[in-house]
Image 1: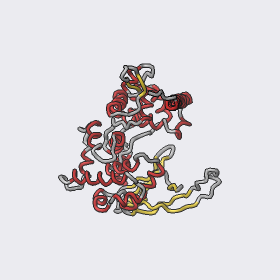
Image 2: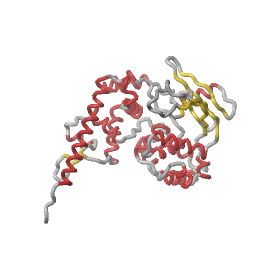
Image 3: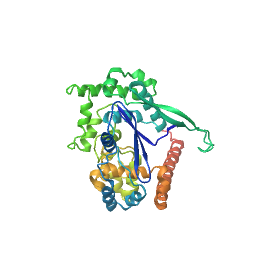
Image 4: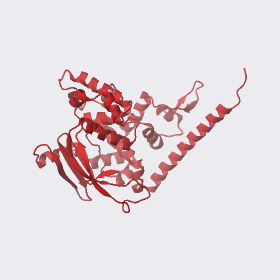
Length: 361
């Protein structure tokens, strides 16, 4: 695969900043700027993007008082913070990400930028051979350049984007969602005369709560409740937005609910009552259950529950397990094994039921 020579880049419409973290500080340099820019402005861009006005240490301390497990995770995963992305970029990026894997999402967004954005610069990069039998040290590493394009403006998408073009870069059924979202933004932007950009930015108002912003965003094609909460958290300043999926519900069930308590299991939708009043497993994540899971995190962690949730979610990723306490890792593995065993047993039971001799009427 191709990887940039620097660790992180912030790419805006008129500036590209490279950022590298060291054990003692964070370094940055301007790779591209459409016009002269001073250090103060660059600092403002970085502070805004990483939300550096929000101090993590007091939040970590507050959450740690409320949750012993999070406290232990926070001790080994310092510095997990939420970025503040441009709302237009965030919205369309998450539509692209629907039911997709990271390599494919990256490829699609790269093509999307190239098709509708403006060329900024060629970034030096290294080509790492994809041969898994070779280590990076043994493999022949070649240098190349990676063209960087700005994320397209809403105005440009309204003028040029078509479903056919979007399908040609791999968006598939999502192409229709993109076009319909562009049209709805245009409709909402007629009053402001800007095509919809001001409408999205207006959702950043502190008067808007997580429920209001979620309801506004799910009007758009391809935006369900989880994606809406992702957009709200990562671009619209909704610090208590909780993107909920089956994995987040599992975290809630594993760490914050008594699995032997039928009432608690009913509340979080892990089970439901059948016609006979018996507790049985429940499959779907309904809007009601979705809200209950989010409310559990909001009640426990407060105003910045979305940030706390993200710290817990990051801890679940395999790449971070080497730094976690051994007993927490073992707990994750044991839970997953139990869940897989349940699914296997259920599948076996269904297979047996389907293969059972049918009675003749």
